Image: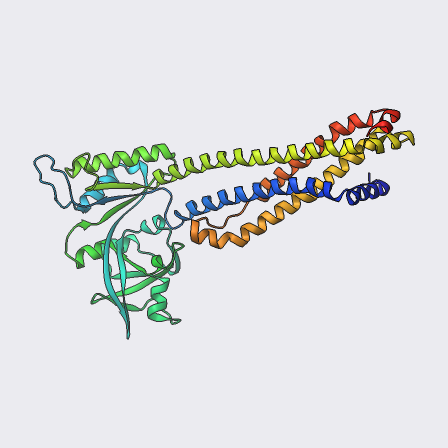
Length: 410
C-alpha cells in the first residue's frame, strides 16, 4: 500500500509545479474556510437565542395585567386590572391536567440589612414551584416550601450576591435580616445562570407578603409551567386559551392588549426555531455553492495538470508503466493536496472564529461562534472525494492514450 518511490514522485511533481499545487490547495482551503465561518456564525446565533432562555423554564408562560384602554360591558377604560388569589385557584383547578408548575408573583423593593450592612434589593413573593420555573440553583439550605406558604412564615431565600454584600465570607444561613423593618430568617442561598441581576433578588412566601404588606389577596403575575408533553403548537394554543379565558373572567375587551397579556415562551421558541431553520437552509445553500465552486476549481486545475503531463505519461507508458500506476499517482497527488488544504482551511476558520468571538458577541450578539468538527470534516471529505473524482476521470483518459500520440502532444 505504501510505495515510497511513488510518494517521492508525487512530492517531486508538487515541488516542480509549485504554483499549480498552491492554486489547487488554495481553492480547497478557501472553500473550507468560508464553510467554517458561515456555520460558525449560525452556531453563534443559535447560542445567543438559547442563552435568552437559559434562566427560565422553556415551558413557562406569564399572565400579566395593567390598565384597560377600551371600555367593555359598561365599564370605563383606564380601569386597573388586579389579579387575586381566586384567579390563581381558578386557573390551577380548571387546567390542572395541562399545568405541571404554577406560582404567583408579587414584586416588592425593600432595604435589607444585617448589622451595619444595608442596601436596597428586589424582593419577590412566590410559591414553591417558582424555583423550577426560574431555574433557581440552591447553593445552601432550601427553597420556600408549602409549609411556609400555609403558615405565612417570615423566611427568606437570598441571592448569592446579596449574601456577599451583607455577609461577605461569613455564614449567612440561619441568620436573621431586617427586610423593610421586619425580621426574616435566611433559609436558603441561591445562584442563577441569568447573571448578576438575578442574584441580587430575594424570595419570600407569597402569603407572607399578602399578610404583611396590605392584608389582601392581590397578585402581580401568575406564572405557569405547562405540561411538557404539549408540543409548541399545542402550548401556544393553550396560552391563547388562558388569555381568552382570563379576559372573559376579568371583563376585559378581547382586543385590549394593554390590559392583559400572556407571555408564552413557546411562541418565542417557535419563532426562533423557524428563524434558525430558514437561516440553516440559507447557509447550506451558500455553503454548498462554496463547496461546488471548490469542486469546479479542483476539476479545472486537474484537467489542466493532466493535459500538461500528457507527454510525461507517454514516456512512462513507453518505459513499461501500467495505466493503473499512472492513474494512482495522479489521484494520490490530488487527494494529498486536497487533504492538506482542507485541514489548513478548517484550522484557519476555527482560529478566526475563536479570535473574533468576543467582538461578535459584543457588537452583533453572536455568542461563542463555533462549528461542529464533524460537519466541517464531512465537508472536507466531500472535497477530497471530489478531488479524487476530478483527477480520476481525466487521469484514466490520459493513461489510455498511446505512447506515440502522447509523445506528439504539445
